[in-house]
Image 1: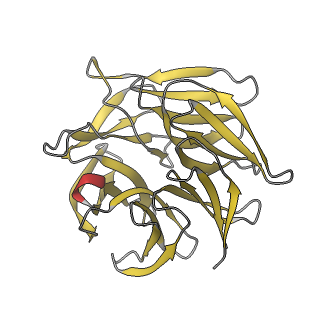
Image 2 (image 1 turned 90 degrees about the horizontal axis):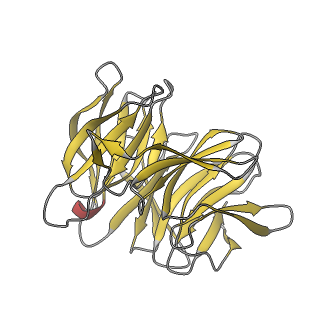
Length: 262
């Protein structure tokens, strides 16, 4: 495998995504921007969205949805005019707790994590934002739930529980809108902090493990099958680019990098 630096000098990059028409984006958490990488010119441009953008999701080729952990909200960005819209900022009449990462299921539900901020108390939880705009809690009593990933034809969901240094797995019940039977998928241990997740076409799970300087690769049986060494110790998130032939895209926050692994 070859690791290449696509962009540097980013301000705590997270959440790489690729749209259906091949545009590449990530967020800059400390820069208040959604940043586009242009593979032909090898340059970047930015949408100034303010707040602290974190996880990023492609809704369609003209719309991105992102977590804003500073403003405790889920927001969207219109790529045509650069305008943002707050989709939700409350659960049961109270502000969301610093949303972190998000994904979409085939029904159009947006699942997202709200980690809380305690290493000692399980105050983190997860929510679903339905297409009708309603928000409900789907899991709770967690220590900083972070990246999440639907697997096994969306029957299961993998969750990085960062401050328990492990990956969890549960059943995604689309009828009840609950995550059930949550259990350990892989226990990393130590001080390593699993962050973002993605899956390959051959059903291998790729986890950015903050503090280890590596991408950890698992099969769906929860077995570690590979580790990919990176420049910088703090990978934050990952996704595959099947539009521009750039392989695995990785954001790394220590050195402010957007990486390609092929």
